[in-house]
View 1 (cartoon, helix red, strand yellow):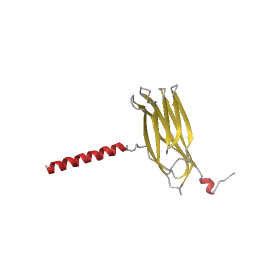
View 2 (view 1 turned 135 degrees about the vertical axis):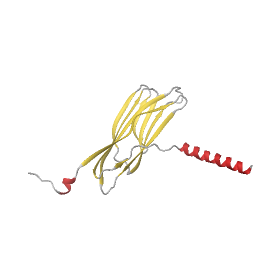
View 3 (view 1 turned 180 degrees about the horizontal axis):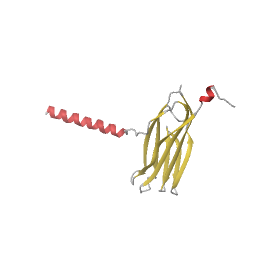
View 4 (view 1 turned 90 degrees about the horizontal axis):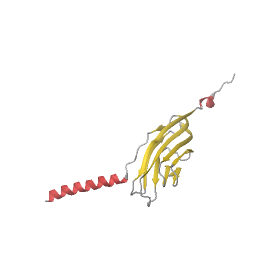
Length: 173
């Protein structure tokens, strides 16, 4: 009879998955040449209570269009590249992202391009799933959020300036 005691007996691995995007359609209109979208996923763990064993990312890009180039990035590192220049199709892969995973904010980006001279709309469908294997206390993973684009802040600021200008104009009149 074999009996396991001590540290070895308490060493259990757990796996946790988070869908980052699922069948997300991203396109480029006739007059544009590229488009992109960011997804922020927070993965937080206590390094004294949790040991990260591995992290992987499954990604799939499908395009029914030719003259299309696509990317999936994690923390500004390209994970999956899809080149559908001459033939529509699909590319998928599972990548080890243990070295890229941050304790905190992790930004995933999906991108699509077409040549400027190619006057048609294109589209690709993106799927991405993050899987974390760990020991100890379970990490907290927040579902993906989309950061507010910079142009929104310019719009809010411009609107505030117009409102202040109208109020001052009425007071000085």
